[in-house]
Amino acid sequence: MRSASDLTARARIRDAALARFGTDGIAGTSVRAVAADARVSPALVVHHFGSKEGLRQACDDYVLDSIRSGGEAATEALGEILQAATPVRRYLARALLDDTPAASALFTEIVERTEAWLAAGEKEGWVRASADPTARSVTYVSWLLAPLVLGGQVGRLLGGDPAETATAVRGARAGLEMLTRGLFTDDRWLAAFTAIDEGKRP
Amino acid sequence: MRSASDLTARARIRDAALARFGTDGIAGTSVRAVAADARVSPALVVHHFGSKEGLRQACDDYVLDSIRSGGEAATEALGEILQAATPVRRYLARALLDDTPAASALFTEIVERTEAWLAAGEKEGWVRASADPTARSVTYVSWLLAPLVLGGQVGRLLGGDPAETATAVRGARAGLEMLTRGLFTDDRWLAAFTAIDEGKRP
DNA sequence: ACAGCGACTGAACAAGTGTTCAATACTCGG
DNA sequence: CCGAGTATTGAACACTTGTTCAGTCGCTGT
Image (tube, rainbow over all chains, first blue to last red; front, side, top):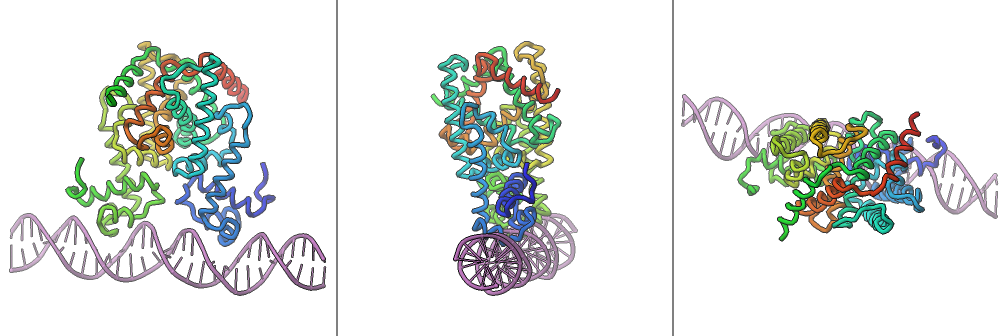
């Protein structure tokens, strides 16, 4: 961990913005607040980033790079996100909700990679077949992101720092349990839902 | 569906606020914008609700009532939320993210009800046992809410109106598939994660 | 008819917003 | 040491924000 003082002002501003945007939302964060956190004048913020919007895009780019550079290699999407630093995760959650173009691109990318990953697993025999692989991939990814987006709620009930790694791991383990052994022993709910689904679009 | 004109001004303001808060966030919504949507003066919204904060609380209460009154009976949490009207869902997602006290209460309530529901299912034999029932319940609920919160992203990729019921059903079916039959055929990921989990807190 | 009362408004206020700009401090190559 | 260029600032701008308030409209009971 780098201490706050040995960073260039530009980086300090970006980090402060990342944190504030993540906790208070973009609309709820003022340039002045970011400037104060970075111990810098508001004018310097716009000098470096052009505008508040420019600052937001800089954060987008930074987050995308952080995540993508994390594990382009073999590891699946799950690990990459869980390993991202806490402020980055919180910011990502906000960005996904606000439909930032960059966040949308990232979401799409993760879904595509995941779908390919699941398809490979299916071929190799360690993933079950699906009636709707795309929907499964989208749902799976949104499940991965859920504890992240709802971090505050989940953390509170799991009794840890909202976005602490240990808490996230506990939740993820419970999730993997369901994904591996299944949750329900029979298909009563699946059958019911399939009926609704087919009934509504004949 | 009621037409906009035959509602009292108070209700019109509340509905407008619900929609705007849901799409633009609370901080991103101005009292003037709400007033304009309801074809009313800004002064009237504070006359009726005291302040912007009061308006937000009124929305909270309305949403809670809408959801709770929906299916207090037998049906499980899933249906209640999916059946809520679209603006209500979007608002709920925002409220959960912003850690509104009312939203937190609702989340806790749903988790508790779900845990009891799962425990009952376990006793009756249609739900599998878990190593960590609370974590499972929390994770399960956050999974239910995920497509709701990430509605924009999910909808875009599943190719329907972001928060359209049909789209939600398609995702939910894919989810139930995983929960019923499982996703993975062996416990390679579960074992790996259990190892991490136990390794990190000895 | 008229008093009372709640719904409703227009104009205004103070505070906070993003952004601009001239001016100063700083750093480095010549 | 000097001068070009960058980093940084304080003060100000125009605008939006939430909120206040005096006052008007329209109804309802007497």
